Image 1 (cartoon, rainbow, N blue to C red):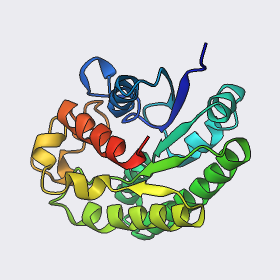
Image 2 (cartoon, rainbow, N blue to C red):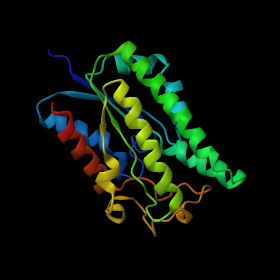
Image 3 (cartoon, rainbow, N blue to C red):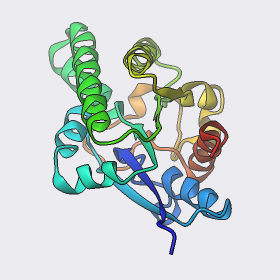
Image 4 (tube, rainbow, N blue to C red):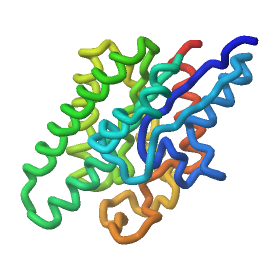
Length: 218
């Protein structure tokens, strides 16, 4: 009997499918496409709500994660949103704009170490998704989401890893693709509540899965 195709998705709450119906986010939708292609596919998700790049890097050292990476024929990485959210919270407390560049530098270092750890375990193709901007009418996200995405592009290029451009995919379509979208301003984000307008809705997850499907060319 043929061994199943293994897809390992690394990320945070978006990879976990938060705010998607039945938590069936882009990773599950991509898996469904792989199965329809005739590939019996096992999906392993290494993700948790609230994870930053540092949390994902730490999780990648676990035995279960190393096994999921080692066995993978396809790996996706989608991380960084919480890094920027925590930078914003630090900024609200300190009013020091340097916290954003500091957090993004740390993010870049974490991504470097994550890629290094993955490549020690697997030669499977890696596709990293950059961030969409859920608050397109606020200055801070308009400044720093592209900076973090550029860091993703720069670090990924060093490892010959393809970056899937979710930023442009969502641009101008945010009200249709983000769950609970309000005014597209940072003021809509309230740290103490659990359902902020920062996750893709069902249509958003479907669009991400389709973009990945068209990119991976399996």
